[in-house]
Length: 115
Image (cartoon, one colour):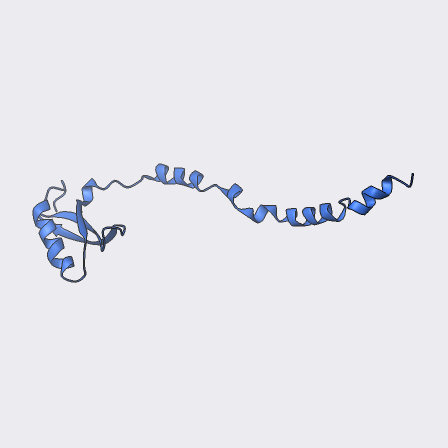
């Protein structure tokens, strides 16, 4: 490729899935002069090796990556400590103490006294 990025060959990424229900997985990259030839090359290189239900061939330049600022924003999405139960370990002891101090039927009936 020349410095302007418009050389004869373009970079393509190939994704495939084995069955119609399975997810797409990245398989490999390839160089091709255009999309049609990239699809043919992907089929020739990949479909004769494994059973394939579908193939996607995408220009690498059409795939957008997150920049550094966007990646930092993802860290906020992972702050879900409230979903972890490890912070509630004290509840077992608290519940046991509560049950030990709970009034039983005999004790309640003993308050009535003998009339």
